[in-house]
Length: 438
Image (cartoon, helix red, strand yellow):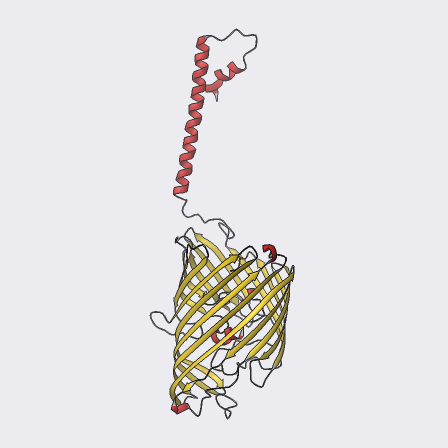
């Protein structure tokens, strides 16, 4: 600062002073030039530092965002239901006795609580863990995976345990469902949701509209597969989705998917194969399972304002073919082939802020099985019945962190055993929670 003192003194010289000499003017000019040169050098130094920081971002520093630099985003989802059902919820849909049957709980039920931990690991990876707390005790990992965040070219790689990307609803966690339960086709064909241990890769194409293509290989632990101790993969999935906006009020998304796995000694108990086996028998199946699916969703919001009112329509269709050997009640083993399918359509309408109503229709087709000669008199090949279900829902969300829901169901999924069901549900979210998918 003192090097510029003469310059400052010259500026504040008394007005009565004599006019400056030529030498004083030359000195003043040199001091001004030195000041300009110093400032220019400082600007150049700052520009160089900025360029270095952009070209080589600091390592070992977590990027900031919803998951803080030093603390992960942690949330806890609390849920519970009250169910009033006349029929035994453990009974499967007619014709799907060898499929999974997650069912419901009668009376008051704590439901499943979810602990979610997610954070950026470094500029290359992001980690997510979703842990389910069972009401009966114990904790299981619903999802525990690492995702890439800097592959580029629209590519994303996921490694670990995850809900498969097939269909539309499969990858959604239960607290985001529009109804208390999953559609019948998800309950019967996927045990509510297909979970996998493996690797998933997705490619978001650079097209003007949304086009995403993905594939998975995994252990094959999720139903309909059977967990086996073996090298290599036990299941594979391919899926693709495309969608676009229509103005500011409409948007849509459509998808196709393919799943293939193998079932080995898959045991099904209490199977009512024929009329004279009212108590059921125990069957075992080993063979290939291949499922194709279609999904479509359309959303509408007047003037693009989803906070006030919006409408959503969703439908999915799955068709599964299984081919292999069936062992009837631990006695006779012979060939068995069956093609089964199911679909649903549902819609939800937010008619005023915080209030929604929903309607869903489910239908299953148990198909006609081709049974080997040794079991032709033991195993029912055609049940001549299509399970259906109709559901009406009303929910209220005081905030984005809480939801209360009432659901009424006319269940005709079991032949000759209609059931009128009532459910009351609450879903509460504590802590930071990431945004949900489209």
